[in-house]
Image (cartoon, rainbow, N blue to C red; front, side):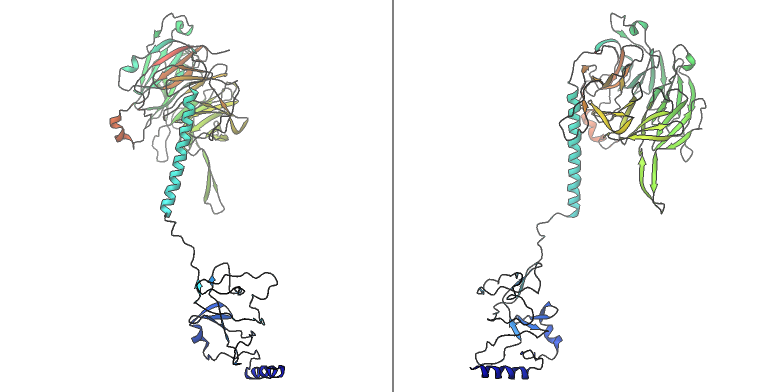
Length: 575
């Protein structure tokens, strides 16, 4: 065909097409009927579901003449088999440079910059037609069939992971505490006096702490029979002039109505002045009692009332160093009594501070958000009182205003005992079922100064005390040993995931009792150490019956020896 004939044929095709594109118009008169059998690729392209051809709404493409008889090209363009994925859209074409295999879909082709051969802009002329072999195939969505875990199972798995980590943490701490009782020497003195007969008169009459009087001549004990016993120590024992062990007998017994939560001596107590020989106790469902250590008579009562005007028992009590105020601890509340004014009049202080937003809704709660379990008076400043709580926080309050001046964190267990050093610059705090005794510097309360590890396996309160020079700290252990630390020693970091603070190892560990040592008190005037032992024991037969009960005292099943004994030691410390 000559050039003139080709030009004439092209001219005739343009005249027959009113849209001036060289392509015959689609004979479809109703576009909605045709679109219903098509798949939309873009806003301008429609694919027929039956034959897989594109029906273009913008018929401005130019196609080559592929008809052997010279007829005009069709307005539909055959497509190869393709797979639509989210990474590609309808503006991308397929690579036709390779022959199409009817059994495999043609690979997607991502056009390079400037490559116009494989795009669909208007006016592109292809040299060869595309062939359609099979209908279009679309890729399926993501397969989540392997995720068979339900949200409830995911929550349970996370909770199990947290529980296992907590168990690992406590097992690690307990192991360190047990190992710490094997450090250092095994001698710290000899027993000079003891008392066991009185505590064996009734069943499970284990001791629950012992405290020396401020003058160092009288010893006060608490036991499970709810009796407070006062021991007048003989001069021969105090001066270490006894050749044999002396068996002690209590000079006074004061029976309380129920379990004694806490007890303490009056700071100005003197054995030479009977009117100052006083101690205070707090019991379940009773007011705070101020008792005479000479006659056992009730001297005064301090009655705390709740919001419905009922008497509530204090969980802990403590005098300021001058003895003018008696502080009592409750759940998120501290009450301060004037010692010279018994009765119900007191200052009620909240230990929490609620922060509210503009709408008046509480957004956070700061402070000690639990029961105040113990107190420690500053040795020289009567306005400073330290309080420990069962949530692990230790705070210092200004008395009697009750303003919280600072708070210490870092204890993993509930605090059961706190004490100041003799100069008042350091504060020691120990917890229940937690081997740590943390030392805080009140001049720098941001972190723990160092940690002392002991063996505490139950929720029983395990007391500790400082000697007269505040150089040595003495504490009982669950395995019957007494540990002594030299606070002037060199602390070191322990290699472990749960010990971020420096650790101080004990210098002495000696076997004081065959049962748990829950009381340790160093005489403030003489080189005597008082220790007491005992805990609640349960047989294996009744463990299943009490496993869900909340017990106020310790549960022990691994100790076969029950020892409820009070001992006095002639304490011999290095240096």
